[in-house]
Image (cartoon, rainbow over all chains, first blue to last red; front, side, top):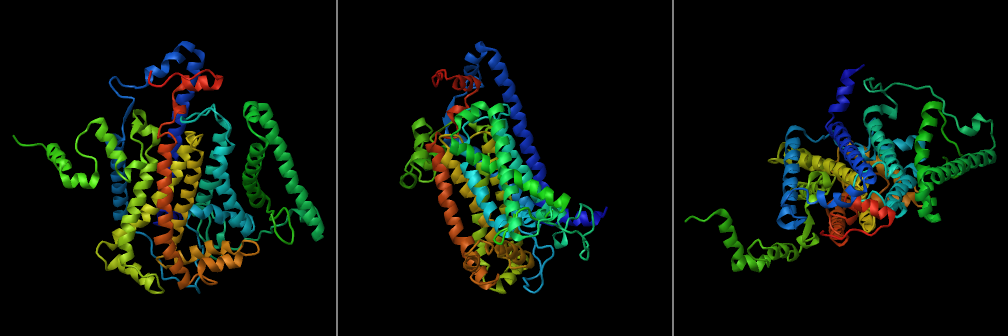
Length: 309
Length: 264
């Protein structure tokens, strides 16, 4: 273990927020899970007890005697918001007094930084550059992420679980979002910040960043393993593999919905279902491709003269 | 008898000058409190009334407010930073150095701006996370979620354009990595890259473009969307959605039984 290296990464002023934000994120997830569990228990209780279900709502709200159901925004909400703004200002002021923003040497186009890292929130995209062509990692994926986020309210047809935390009523949507957020976003930020070193090589935490390290790894394309050499053959083979993934995966999603989530399935239109299916499979494809590359040194699956996947 | 501070304040609010400015006068009657919101160009984006339960921390975690708070800090620190900064090469780097060593409180100002930017990006993500898990994007709020995604994009772009401005190695190479991606767009990638940077590489033109985007265009666009975002909260039923009534309502919605009437 090279503790000094680890300390240098963790204490770089731009990384300190990341080190600090990970526990904060864990706290928020814990909070959501806790409230979801409490709600799920209450729902179970109410479902078992119709008499309680009838009156529970009126008993709990307002939950203190004498409390009004509604209050005026001015001053009751605005004073809280003002207080919250003051508290965050104080926190940021303390942070600014204790930690200085980084300022390196003046920009020099002739001296490349190694590693040259993007701002932390873009590290996921930079990490994707390892596994995909730049226009897929940098253009197609961000576009799909933005579109995917925007369509969420339009493809979610589940009437349950609006406005309160729950796990049991929204298992699919919650696990999908958590997968996208934790695996595809937070994990990439952690890899990009703490693991990627010079030459964008993989250094385990505590391993010294050796600028002269050479890795003798041969990345092969999937068609090569199967002994396909002609360009046309590679293009056709790749199209079959990628197309096969979407077909088999699509079938799996379809049967999952038919068997386990019949209600959700019947509520969704064909358009809604196919958009959801496509986005879900594309999302799952990212860690699959990463696994192929990191574990089996497979560079591309589908090779054509115009694009590689 | 001596007047209390409250009474003095009430007197102030009753004066002709105060009323000419704020329109709503003194008093804490329900009408006056409603007018305080409705008669104010900024506050009228809010609802007049809010459910008591939405005031608690567990309801919203105050993440939206905190995000707005960091945005306001960024505006308040960004404007003085602009006084000390020339978007030109190599003056930009010298100005940033001066902020650290010459300008009074310049270091603090710059720190506050940078850390608030980090905090804002995190808070936007946390806010989205919370809204998703609480199912708060459901009808009738679908479009407000879409505006929220646009605001997420704005936040990232604001942070990204600001990253170049110190003109140090960190900034230069991060922007080089990022902007090279633009040239990967099929067919017109090089054109887009050129348009973005005002040249074929990150240079003085790119710095000026990022400066204008960072200080003018993106903040104005962000404020525009923030205003719509807030206004839509009120229009879509306030912080409180009827569907977030406790389980009896939820159970009834599921079975199709009629909802209990409000206010019983």
